[in-house]
Length: 394
Image (tube, rainbow, N blue to C red; front, side):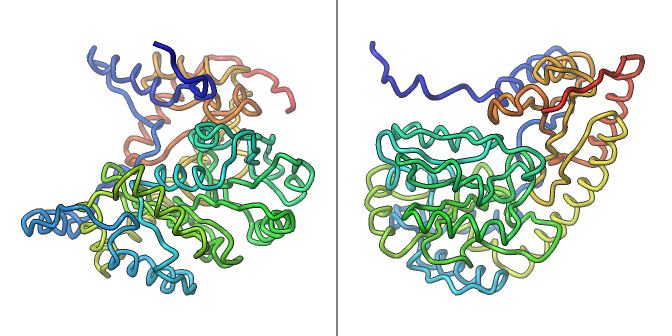
């Protein structure tokens, strides 16, 4: 059997490989503290579960429109008005089978064979693989602490080439938890617009933004494409439901692709998601958001006390991107040692791009405060007696 050559551009997801190693140790009786996979430890609120149950009991399990339930699109539109003060027409909103499906559909619609899409290094690995799946090229631009691990307007202008078609950003970002400052994002959008390109902004962590007023890239113009999800702020990871907001002219093309690739998102998940926007559900989500912020405010100084450096304080999501070069010149080896010796599961920078692969590791604080405190105690023991090294500069 001959496999498609595009598979050579798709790399394994090492986060999942580490999770498998940890699971194998757990099966041997070890207790592991998981701070690797980016999944909220909270699950869907009771109202959402009840809505799903009611939908099944009422037989609401047939196919929906490929663009999603009209009432859910309307609820998402109202959410943008209520939270961001933005009037987004429901006709611009397409409900998808998770944010991954949204990115897949957008890339299918916009990425040509051989075309370039600019994105920062580090960034979420699946984003570049979506581009590769349509025979485009994800051009990773080294983005360090000075740029908040994000692209800047100047970097977009410098690296744009004849092959470039657009940019794919994430704010707040996985793996860094950092956002793009509003004026910087405005400059990026303007630079891309001048070149007749597309701007895609992954905002799946925008609901978990802690420092300042919430904002969306949709405020910068109707040509900006935004991806969002019910997985993170809304705690519905396994329900596989997300959405995208696109220019009106792009929606029919997205709909055509969705009809062929997915038929529709899960009907049960859509009916359940309607309950996400009730006052009681929103109040619960905000309580959980406050808990995530409390965990961030604990774990960042705790990591620094352990000898890590957090060069940019994360202002969103539930990740910390920590410089481990004070202890090791190989983050991959260090995370394996911490897994095997301390029972603490973190993720090396390997997945997120070559620029920070050996120097940084990602911690997810989407776990209980008790687990975070125990992980810190274990790492204190792990590093006790080890000699610090002199870190080299980037």
